Amino acid sequence: MGTGLAWILLALLALLLLAACWWDLRTRTIPNPLNVTVALLAIPFWWATGLAAWPDAAMQVGVALLVFVVFAGAFAIGAMGGGDVKLIGAVTLWLPWQAVLALLVIMSIAGGLLTVAMLLRKRLARSEAPIEVPYGVAIAFGGLWLIAQRFLYQFG
Image (cartoon, rainbow, N blue to C red):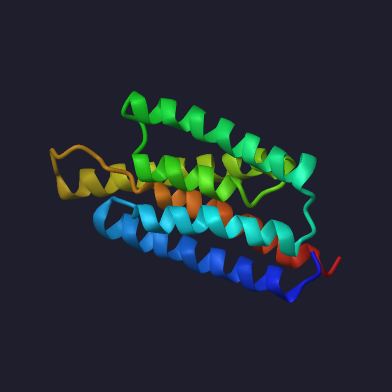
C-alpha cells in the first residue's frame, strides 16, 4: 500500500469509525451520511492502492453485498440496528475479502464483551429497560483493529 493518499484515506476511515462510535454511544444510531461517506471513500482507496477494477474491486463489492445481506437478516429479526448493518457493509468495502472473516471475528468478540458490559450496567442500575447495545462500537473496533494491523505490518 504505497501512496500517501491511501494513508490519508485510512486515517479518514479511522476518524469516521470513531465518529460512528460517538454517535452510536450518544443516540444508538449511526447517521446515513456517515455510512455513505465510509462506503464512497472506499472507491478512491481502491484506486490509491492499485486495486484492479476487475476482478478485485468487483470482488470487494460482492463480498460487501453478501455481508450486508447476511446482517440485513439480523436486522429483520431485530438482532441488529439498520445503521449497524450499513456500517458493516461499508467497512467491508475497504477490506480484502480475506480480511473480512477477521473483521467479523474481532467485531463479534468486541460485541460480546460490549453486550456483557451493557448487561452489567443494567443490573447495577437495576433497570427494567431493554438493553440497546451500541454495536457500531464493536464494528468500529474491528475496523480500527484492522487499520492498525495494516499500518503495523507495513514495517515488517
